[in-house]
Amino acid sequence: MITRRMINFPAATAFRHPFFEIDAFKKEMDRWSNLMNSRKLSGGLHSGVFPLLNITEDKDNYYIRAELPGISSEELDIQLNGRNLTISGERKTERNEGNVKYHRRERDAGKFSRGVMLPGDVDSENVNASMVNGLLTVKIGKAELAKPRKISIN
Image 1: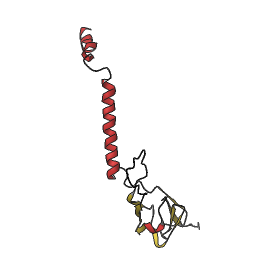
Image 2: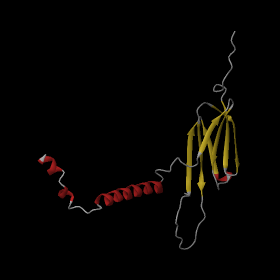
Image 3: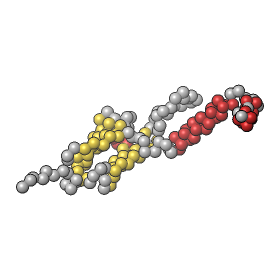
Image 4: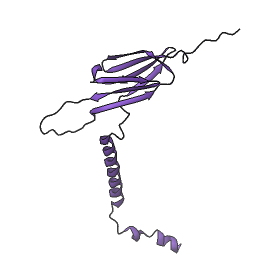
């Protein structure tokens, strides 16, 4: 019991500032925040995140729909290499002249490239893309081997 009191003795922590743990926690959170922001600015965390997209399929085609607000179709480069589809381009934001103070800046600008592997073999001759209201839709035909076949029972 004497040992227990010696280890848990309250005077051992009396030399610390009353808010020592809160200050230590704040410093650690600031360190993590700075680390995350430095990765975001260098592209470490955001690489591969833009544009957001969905991949769906039916029996004959794969459909890739990507959100690209504010980007025209002329600014995009879409390439299909085997089963790999790459969408790349550059997102530009307005230039503010003079001394501008941002209160919040969530829209990144700069070059982007997003690559995805499609779930099956594709027919590279049967591909088309359209852009409507910032939504890019790429329709890629499935290769004959990838299409489901009905098997009749004899």
